[in-house]
Image (cartoon, rainbow, N blue to C red; front, side):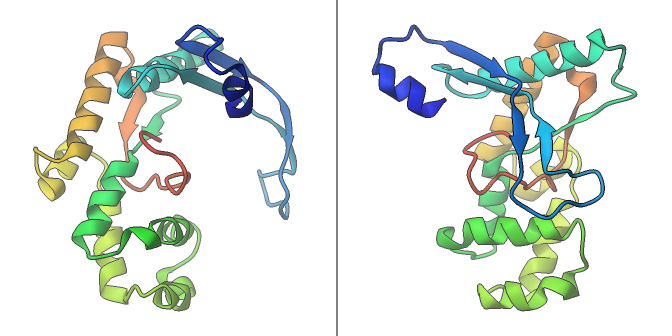
Length: 193
C-alpha cells in the first residue's frame, strides 16, 4: 500500500481509506491455531493524523462483529500505544536503540517464563530487576492504572485518553480494553496498537 500511495505522488485525494482481505502465508513453523496459510483483513487510513483514524478503524471492527451477531461480552478489542512502553523503557533507563529487541523479548513472556529468555535479555543489557519492573507495568489493564504509573501529563496517557474519548463518541467504548501487555507490533508501529 505504501508503495502504491508513494507512486501516485500526491495524485490521490486524502484521506485515503483502503481495505483488503488477501490470502496470506507465514514463513514460520506452524503451531496450534496458527497456520501458514490464512486470510487477513487489512484496513488503512492515510491522511488523518492521530487517534481519529484509529477510532474509525476500531469502529469498523466493532460494526463487523455486530453484523455477525457478536457483542462486547463475546469479544473485546485490546489496545495499547507505542508511547506507553516507550515512556516506561525510558524511565527504566533502556536506550531507544534497544526498543525493538526489548519488545520482541517481552512479547515472548506471554508464552514462556522469564527464566527461559533471561539469557537473551542479558545479551541486550537488561538485568532481571529491570525486566521484572517492566513486566509489572505491563500487567496494568486500566487507564487509571497507567495514569498512576506514568502520570496524567504523560503523552502516552493523553493519547490513550483521546482514543477512549473518540471510542465513546462512536459508541464502542464497551468493546475497547486497554491492556499495557499488548506489545506485538510496537517495534514497527508508531502509535496505537
